[in-house]
Length: 77
Image (cartoon, rainbow, N blue to C red):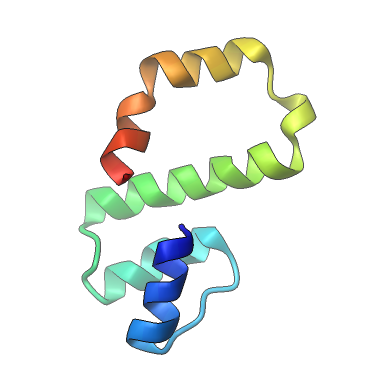
């Protein structure tokens, strides 16, 4: 997400004030395809949830994400 922020700012001269806003912006620049934009926006939203509402995320939910949705994280990396 940080790399995307730098790419938008330095490569395309546009700034996104929130991680979730970056997905449409990089899509407009054709850096990500439509499936990648959807994944990126979802990950960005969940990143915000983990940062600001971490106390509301159960251990079980984290286990489920790490066990069954790890491919989304690996795909983005």
